[in-house]
Amino acid sequence: MKIGILGTGDVGCVLGAGFAGRGHKVMIGTRNPAAQKVQDWLEQTGNDARTGTFAGAAAFGEAVVIAIGWPHLQNVIELAGAGNFAGKLVMDATNPLRFETEGQPPVLDVGHTDSAGELVQRLLPEARVVKAFNIVGNPHMVDPDFPEGKPDMFICGNDANAKKTTGELIESLGWPPVIDLGGIENSRYLEPLAMVWIRHFFNQGFNGNHAFKLLRK
Amino acid sequence: MKIGILGTGDVGCVLGAGFAGRGHKVMIGTRNPAAQKVQDWLEQTGNDARTGTFAGAAAFGEAVVIAIGWPHLQNVIELAGAGNFAGKLVMDATNPLRFETEGQPPVLDVGHTDSAGELVQRLLPEARVVKAFNIVGNPHMVDPDFPEGKPDMFICGNDANAKKTTGELIESLGWPPVIDLGGIENSRYLEPLAMVWIRHFFNQGFNGNHAFKLLRK
Image (cartoon, rainbow over all chains, first blue to last red; front, side, top):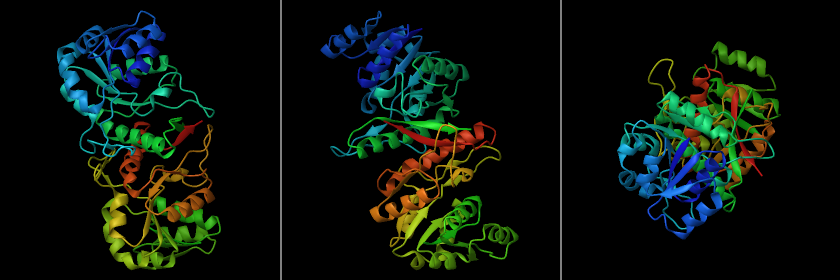
């Protein structure tokens, strides 16, 4: 599958390399494809991965991952061009984080009656947006593995087929079958769940070796 | 320890019986102590458990559990009398659920900039409020056990000693050491986490055999 990744932060780089390593064709989009960090990623990733502009990566992908910091989200979507997402699966990995105090955990900038996931769906009304990858730190996004088992990925979105494809893509990265909460408005619960992860990260002295599992019987 | 329980819904009855079975002295408070359901609970629980009014149970407890449905929360706290909570550990198990459509999942009535946990702390400024027991269904509140291990309880609150006692009480019910997220404002994340549990409950056809675990390494 051709996958466009928007954003060359840790999340974009990890997911891009993960998908490229599973036989997908990946283009990572960025303001500055010539940046050393991006070139380093390209060299380390191999597997025919490529770089481009935001618009180039969005146009390239049959599915597109949004891995952009919250302050830049709307601008990047404008730069990428809404038309380049039309009809496509768009996996939104963002969290609406507002950092208020140096060294302290962020807070959510939107919530309760709205969410980043819903905003992305509104900005891209012709896309099939699925919230995914937002509830775990990037070191555990590919082949997550803990002594007590594998964590679970929660997703939500309005389009059943888009969620089915998302589930297959996430399983290809070494996850168990995803847990689908329902429509994209469930981002109002999954973004606070990211905050539980983040608070624990700060409480443990910036140790991110944790992830959620839904025990079942 | 003397524990007052406010509320004779499933949560109050399960926690009351659980604490009574661990050697604590329990009084469960209700509008109508003579109700058949309450008398049945008393007979089944044994262990010197007793019933009383809301004010009686709050006065009785060295620690008090609030297990009241959201629409009645403020009224019950008024009936119980704020002075009866002063200086005490108060474990708030409530979720601010608003049921809008029959058979459909509820939504949160407050969130993002406020939470039920913070409301309880404001209503009881002299109490040491700890959010606890709100992220799991009542069948798993005592001796939780799943094929893949034991779930985790997340708590938060402003008073370190109150959280320490809460942790000991929760461990006495068969849980592993609790995970403390920080101040009571973290209820803004733990109440949406309850919604993840509730959404999955509805999605699975009202099957509540699930609970969260935080994998670590």
